[in-house]
Image 1 (cartoon, rainbow, N blue to C red):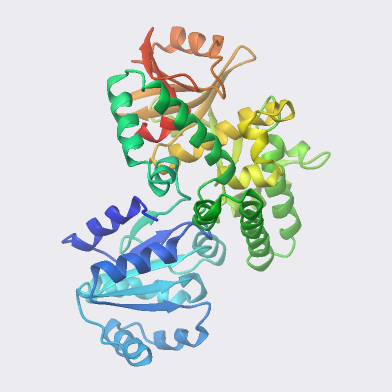
Image 2 (cartoon, helix red, strand yellow):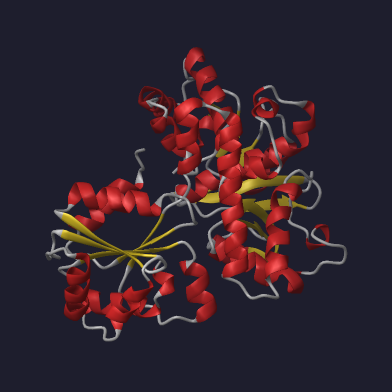
Length: 431
């Protein structure tokens, strides 16, 4: 399946000031697959090293001289490692701290070798274990679960993507048959999500029971990681917080509350668990803005946030939703529908590199997302249906007078009263 990050990898390969690359991302988002695919297509050969599976590889880093490391790997792998023409992959690099440190010397002394390092729990390891990190000597990229555009690509809907982008740019409605088709695919995506293994299962036969089994296996792997790569005292707390994320999204007030994890729960008790989940890339926080001023990050509240899962399909699976609940909008699904929709939008914003926050004005108004697009601070209101009447956006626009606002819903494209209307399936266009 095609991934948009492939083009970024090509740019890295061809850059004159190229540094070793660290590809970050949660487990099962497809890092190993896409990097090996990239290496196979763009290089003469690939030297793949997995430090979790091949424990002895750590001995090759007894000294950090790149040429010595290359010689040892070349002999062990029975492959000639050619400058500029061999891709060297260090997978699960968090299992070998010296390999992480060696990236500094590859940058300074042997930049002719192309090195990509990966690690599902690299963020956790670097922060918690205080590894010697090659600051300034590496480039970073992030790989996330497949967004809705990549889902459309995987389902052979490139023409639909082009039509959606055209309507987004022109603010003209998408032809009704395409609009309805895109909404149906969007609903499928809410259930399937973007984990490559799950999307592959979907493409094979659309067996939703097998899809759920695949999703559960990923959730189980996440829980295993919480047990293996965590302080023993934090394991039960981390698991409890993760299970609680989707549950709290069903609440009318979606601000994350410690007291809903357990009676009397406090921030001091669960902050390490929340940090672990964010560092592992399987959840992320959306902070509340106390003031609408630049820079936005300086005016966020550190105590008020919403909490979302990294994949909307896993979010659906964690609440044991059925595909019919989403497609036919089961009445019991309504309370969770809004939170699931926000989770979907939040994930897409992250993929697009938009740093977002939310805003409230007491009990009068709430804007789901605030972000900067170009020079402008733009409010984004999210509706899970075509009922777009809301006082919140009017209150915000009257108070702050933004250049324009965005409303995301099931309605077709349009632009009226300084509000750009975007269908939910076109969220990937906001950049």
